[in-house]
Image (tube, helix red, strand yellow):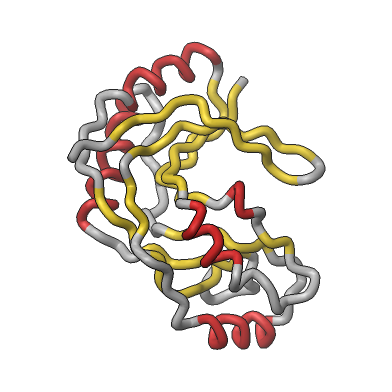
Amino acid sequence: MYRLFVALDLTESAKESVTKICSGLPGVKWVEPAQMHLTLRFIGDADETLFLRIKKELATVSAPAFRMLLRGVGRFPPKREPHVLWVGVERSESIVQLHDQVERALVRTGLEPEGRAFSPHITLARLRDMPAARVASYLEQHGLFQAPPIPVNEFHLYSSILSAKGAIHRREASYPLGS
C-alpha cells in the first residue's frame, strides 16, 4: 500500500530563504527543508494497481514550465485555533492550469475529485496548543516575506511513510513540463 501525493519541489535557494523565517515560536514543529514542497494534490492510500494507473495517467499531463513566487505567510485554519503555518504561493494561471490537469488525470484513474479548493502554499510548521496572539505576532513579523522566483520544470509523484520522526517522502516518478 502506498500513501501518495503530487507535488512541486523547491530549489535549494528557495528552501534556504524559507528556512530563515522558521524560528521565533518555541515548541513549534518546523518542517525540515528537505520535506518542503507545494502539494498539488494529496491522494492518500493506493494499492499497487491504482499506484500504477496513477503513474501512467500523470504522464499524460501537458503543461508549460513556469516560475513560482513565494510571498507572505499565513495559517490554517484562518478563524479557529491555528494548526499550520504556511508560506503563500502566488496564484498564477500556470499553477492553476497544472493543478487542474493533475486533478483531471487523477479523476480518470477512478479517484474522487478533491473536495477542497486549491490553496497553493508551502507548509512551514505544525502547531499544537499555540496561543493565537503568538501566531499573530509571527505572522505580522514575517508578513512581507518574499523569495526569488523559483523555476518549475517538472512535478513529482511522492509516496509518504509516516514514522515517529515525521513523514518520510520518496519520489516515485517525475514528469517534465513543456517549454
